[in-house]
Image 1 (spheres, rainbow, N blue to C red):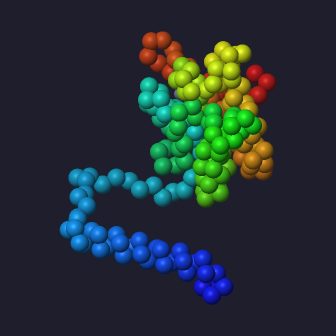
Image 2: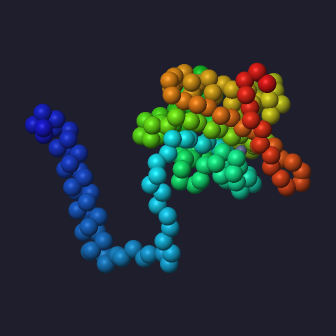
Image 3: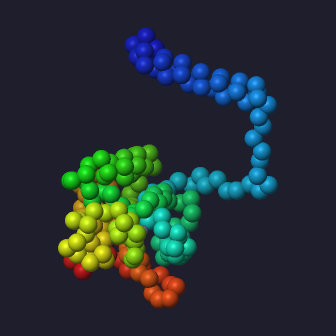
Length: 191
Ligand SMILES: [Zn+2]
């Protein structure tokens, strides 16, 4: 095989070098990795769902509880993509394709590697990504909530185009209910 595909020989060579370097580096320097006091579960049950939501720390507990209690997805039973603005980058696909590719490539990889069949996207009220990062010319014609809902619907269309056969898509909007609670509304087309 190597003769016909010299690139594989090259990859093996570099992998071999890397393994050797690791071994010799740790033994040369007497490095032993300290273990933590406890051990933790390794989830090997497989997944078929991707959940994308914003990284805003104020919402993480609400997101985790909602995902567990209402979507009935335990930690380790889905692929999380947690980035500022959730899937907002996807909506830049037309005007800023490089921005969009950051999200698209991760999603393509996970869909292919884990044969995903379901995508859940959660956006939230008072998202700093929208107020601080998304260019004003994109957001000025709509109030922030309408902009986010419009982006969710656009995202659904883009994902359906990219993965035409297999993907079920669910979208939610998390609202702050004063003073310190979060509620979730499902976003559907035509509503
Ligand atoms: Zn946010």
